[in-house]
Image (cartoon, rainbow, N blue to C red; front, side):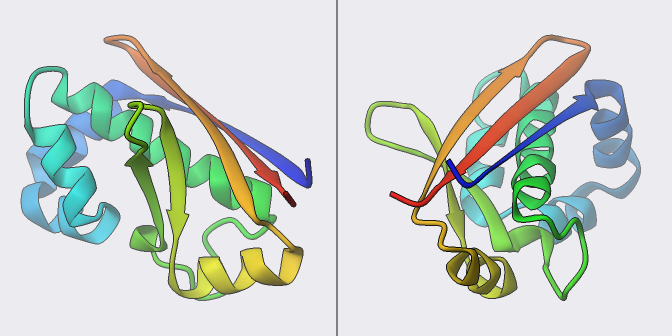
Length: 125
């Protein structure tokens, strides 16, 4: 293990952002794949909140926060064929992870109607 980040998000906060800013919020913060996943089926706001928390957790693990030119969409939650979530990085986030020697991620997401939490572990193997 190289680093660990964790974040918790209030689902109501994300619901308000979606209601007030709609498509501009979705496009700024989430990839097309994340939007497609969150918009199908139920629990839309919880799924967005979990992905938002995951992005925060990953950047905590990288030690950058939202600085160094990283965009929200540089961090993407993707599902493996098993359904397990993992992280895909691009842009500046991928460059920083490479410098740090990050080879893989372990990601855990959990949510209720009120809160979403994400734990991201960066590994060198």
